[in-house]
Image (tube, rainbow, N blue to C red; front, side, top):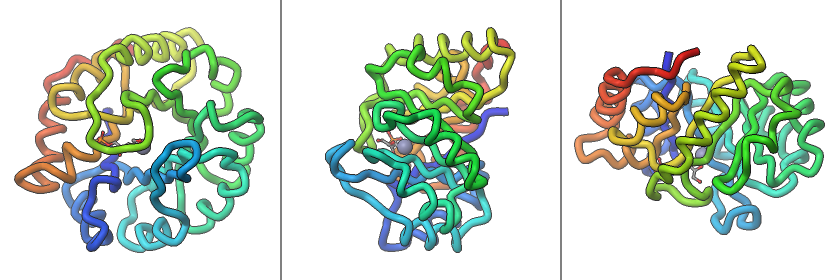
Length: 225
Ligand code: DX5
Ligand code: ZN
């Protein structure tokens, strides 16, 4: 089953609760929240206060993507306000193994994220600690960027690693996912699609955006297990 996680980064923050509820009603699987600290990436976005408000607007799992340097002190605050899944960047975590264990200890689902320049090898020794490997398909920091086609090969390699290990972590892609790129990502091996612009900025609205993405994915041939 392919999951779709709308990213609220592209939503209208003046009515965020309503935008999240719309995504849930449209059949979203998770809600993706992008946390940026102005250091790991140039942009600044939201903290636990906003995640707490989103938590009150949906029952869906909240996938809180931490694009921050040294995320450890933030794990508990985000968990306390309802983060269910917490992906952290390999590039931001000098003690990655411990950070992932801490996410698990707090009762959330740990994930590890690879920037476009980071090889799959970088996470090889933490694969048994994670539920999700996220392949960034744009450079992190902004919504609405163009998908990097070279990342499809990385998705294939992560999928091959999963096969070799006999484990079942989710393979998530994040950035530039639309009706053209979603089927390519699924055929390469992705199991979770994060999408901001193609859902929240769809000219006919959130329901149409999500439906179009589902339709595009249903025509794809998923990679062999
Ligand atoms: C980028 C974020 C993404 C972003 C994706 O740094 O991690 O989650 O919201 O947005 P789109 O789908 O518009 O590329
Ligand atoms: Zn993200």
